[in-house]
Length: 298
Image 1 (cartoon, rainbow, N blue to C red):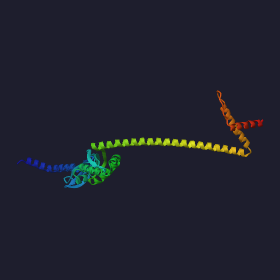
Image 2 (image 1 turned 180 degrees about the vertical axis):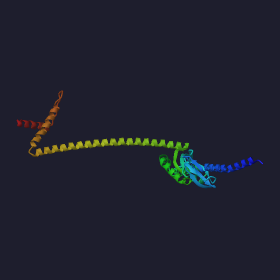
Image 3 (image 1 turned 90 degrees about the vertical axis):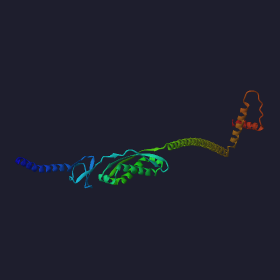
Image 4 (image 1 turned 135 degrees about the horizontal axis):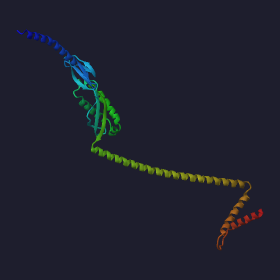
C-alpha cells in the first residue's frame, strides 16, 4: 500500500475546496461589479423581470441572479432624413423632407414599451406633419415654416413620452412641389407681375392727370385772383373819381376827357404821307373846349 500516495491525495483534496471557494468568490465579484460608460445605461433583469437601471460609473448587482439584459446608448441620435407626401388646405400636393433628433432618457420604457423606436418616431412625425400641413395653405406653409416646425416638435414630444425618449429637434428641411404645380405657380407669378406693372402704369397716368388738373386749377385760381384785384383797383379808381366829382370837380373831369380826345386826334394825325382826316364835330368841340381851358388857365 502506497502511504505517500494516500497522503498526497488527501492533501490535494483538502486544498481543492478552498481553491474552488476562492475561485467562486473571484468570479462572483467579477460578475457583481459592472462599470457603465458615460454614454450608456444598463437595464438589469432578475429572472426575466426588470430589476433596475444602472447609470454611468461602478455598479454592483447580485451574481447569478441579476444580469445585464440591455445596454442602451443615451447619446443624441438622428433619424435618417425622410420624405412624405402631404396635401395642403388649398389641395396642393407637396413632398416634405424632415429630420428628427432624439435621445433616450428612460431606457426601461424604450426597451419594454416599443420594439423599434426609430421606426415608431418616424411614423409619428410623418403623421403629424401631414396633419399640420393639411391645416395650412401653400403660401402659409412656405412663410410660417418656423411655427410649423415648433408645432410638429411639441406634438411629437407629447406622443413619444411613453417611450422614454426626448425629441430634441424636429426640422422640416424642404417642401417640394411637383412639376405641374411648379409650372402653374410660375404662370401665376408672371401674371401677378404683369398685373402689378399694369397697376403701376395706370397709377402713374392717373397721377399725371391729377397733377395736370391741379396745375390748371391753380392757373385758373391765379387768373381769377388777378381779375379780382384789377376789378378792385378799377372800383377803387371809380370811387376816387366819383368822390372827386362829388367835391365840385366836374369841370376837371370834363377837361380830362377832352384832353384825352385831343391826344387821340394828335396821334391819328402823325404819320408819313399826305392824309385827309375827317374829324367828327364832337371831336372839334372837345378840342376847342380843351384849348379854351388851357387858355383860361393861363
